Length: 395
Image 1: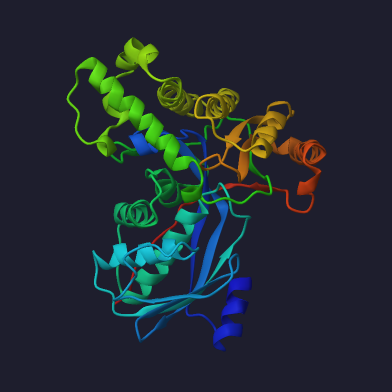
Image 2: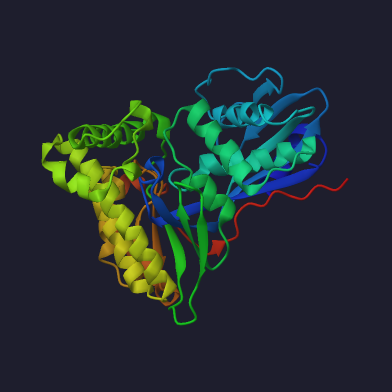
């Protein structure tokens, strides 16, 4: 791999380990986890690799093949505030892990992503693969739930993105050829196997050519607008409520929303409309998957994408165009934006027998609309995969 070659070029020796975390896609369940919703998703067989070795002096020294400048800090003196560069996710991971476990050794490593950045939760994948490596070096074993929590805390509390646990959960709990059906309110989940009667599928990723940063996008604002709507609904209904940041849509029944939605400012009402309808789509999607009806699951994924555009009001023009092309392309069961929906990728569940024609049509139509993306746009076809696995330590 390129990261191992780069590691040798920097340090003059082979790495001692190779960590990996897959990317994820969420066909139904977008913009929901931060308010304790339900999600469905897959890990895919592309992701983040880190070639690494221990550093006895406690220094963390990381290089990314996607970003310039090597980043350094010490395990005992991680900056208390983010530095506003690509390595903030790793600083946050170091700090959050150190609050739970004693770190004795540092790490040097080279990070390689197997797909373009933007929409596949590469940030969570970088954090998880880094934690895998740092834990291995320091003799630490994390359970799946601990790994999810530490990665979540790094992104939310250190980097400052108002995420839920969708990304970390998909990238950790998923199983090949199974749909992850997760309730983020309590962390309970089910891995629903692909039914024998289900038509075959693969996962296509269409990269718009636009990269993005969640913290610098409208992601946090959209979450705040939803929470503002929830806070108002609680007041209208005479429900008890506390701090604004603790208001959760999951705690306000759908009928309360229906009763008072006309009293909400229009943007807040649209955010709530997306959340409540997405919750229903997830439940219906899980049942469709259970009975092997991938066409219905795909229709619900397309509906999720439409709600993200109209109600959540996300998506750059390029990404919206990709979505519209997908809805008019034979061989695509369904699909939507990936990630926060502000630039990045779209994903689609496709019939493998249409793979060539799907990729050709989507590419031709997209580049006709955005010719400046020639050379930056890309189409990639993947399969579902197992989530990241913390290696068992030998003593």
